[in-house]
Amino acid sequence: DGERLAPARLADEQLTVLEAAIPALERDGLVRKELTRAILDRAAAWIALRQPARAVESLQRVAAIDDIRPQQRAAVEITLARALWDSGRDRTGARTLASHALAVIRGVDGDHAGDTAQIERWIASHTGA
Image 1 (cartoon, one colour):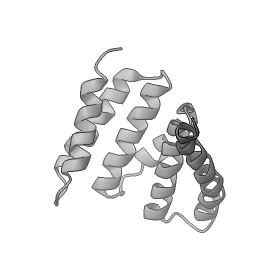
Image 2: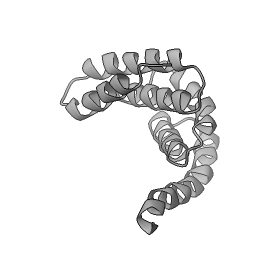
Image 3: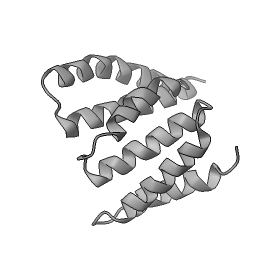
Image 4: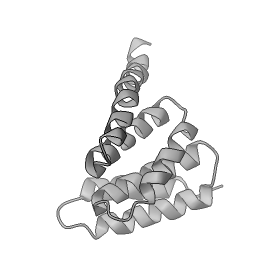
């Protein structure tokens, strides 16, 4: 039973650090790469703690930024899709975001087979309402 609690404990500890770091990054001026990574990590922690609704607003703000790198955009969009789906919100929008994330990651130079496969699996397993 302790093994099942470990991811939640880790996510909770991660949230403590990120909740302090994100406002500091925002205060110091938008450092997009670092701020985006911190917001993604915080969102993943909320999802792991089964509180995905808490991740939606900040992910939507990051998704609205035009000049983030494509690989980060794909990560933001698939994480937002997960948060929307898991919170019972806009499931059609979640599938649309996931499909866009897949198109974005396929267009990124380099080997992103793992990311591509992960997004494809998510889309395949989230087809119903």
